[in-house]
Length: 151
Image (cartoon, rainbow, N blue to C red; front, side):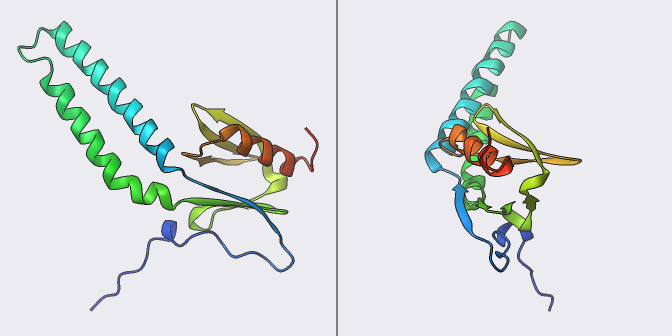
């Protein structure tokens, strides 16, 4: 019988190195997740309702109602994964889910895009910190850590 191995995304952050100090951690917030999913459902429903009305559909509410239900079902299904994601900021690096590690010297910029924090790296894909209730605080902490306390 084959063994089922746990997905690497759910293994949690990598272990701290000897002498490394944890500064803070960033966890997803359930209220922010629900708010974001509600916004997605309302915008999608409104766009689809407008499209169905302009198309002259006999029941312009049917497709938007179905889409809202499906987005809500997906949001409910993915909530456990979204809430389990944690990022840790140490005095040397940013440690993310699935063992993702970003040395502080590799952070080139930190941006806020619609409440989501994008951590830009030199020569690599950006890291995304989602559903944090205070994205400006995350940006301030990451900027201070990556610049050695300089703005």
